Length: 400
Image 1 (cartoon, one colour):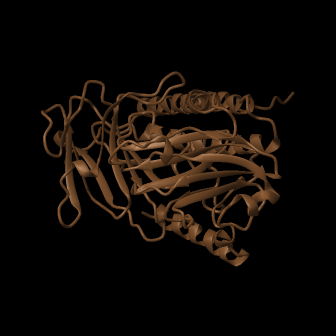
Image 2 (cartoon, rainbow, N blue to C red):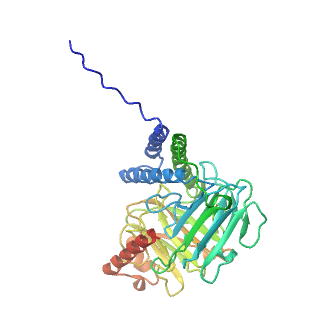
Image 3 (cartoon, rainbow, N blue to C red):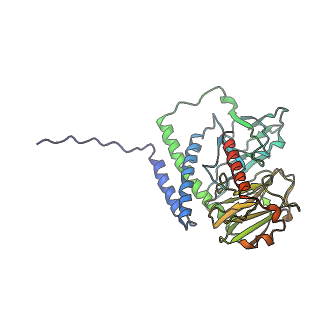
């Protein structure tokens, strides 16, 4: 009798297996997150997972300390850590015993800061900030160009000593006027490897990178689900803290944090003085601890974008329903979420009076509760123009 030849079976892919297992564990973290109550929560969790997978692969492939380069740490589609909609984040990896040169040009954005960390964020701790400064501490030429050195040598003008354990350089470039400010440029190289090339890729290298990507993915998800407990959820709901130095050692930055729980007929009014700080901004973030959609919805505002009342205060209305106000912050269906205000490039500490006052009112009470209600109103056409401007500004920024 004829016996058909058995089809040879292929060996299972082992090189990516560790990463594939990490993705399965990551999905379990998403579906088991304690805040998931609705279909929207879960859908957003899967979207967050997709961005985290993408970012983790990028970070694993960027783990190059001998031939370093800057990558975008987070962005509209790779969100993490209550990312600031006004900030471009970059990072590069380092060795603490090597010397690196960072060259660039200063754009017209409101702030440019540098920070050396001794590791990455984990579910149990924030990495130590070993060095943190902004561009006021470096010499910048008349044409906007600059050169900074990081290494084991003695600190001096434009030279910053790498402390033992230095592992990552983080750069933040912060916008206030999205439409008119332009970013700078930046690059990095290791002094003793410039002009050379890294060794060719190997199968072992690929296996290691996929494994690292899986570890980054799981750590990233666990870490930033733990963050809110550390900094937000023990605070009374529908309140915001006094201004305080931002955890993590960022230079010249203060923040006010809070979380809300509102019905569709409630509005949280956040009133804060317009500061003389070069940067001041507010944002909303989902329970996944990432920014809400800031491209197609007004879920954040800087002091430049916001309407300032005649008394010098900015009054934000956090609401699901459209109040017809310039400073409406859209909840986009999020009954529960986070709110944060940041001030950057400060020359001194902020006082409690510089921070926000919060009041929860009924939607229909807004005309009586806002002292300059009529002056703060916008028409539907004006609102569409505001959203169109956001969409264009972010699209242009993504090409920077």
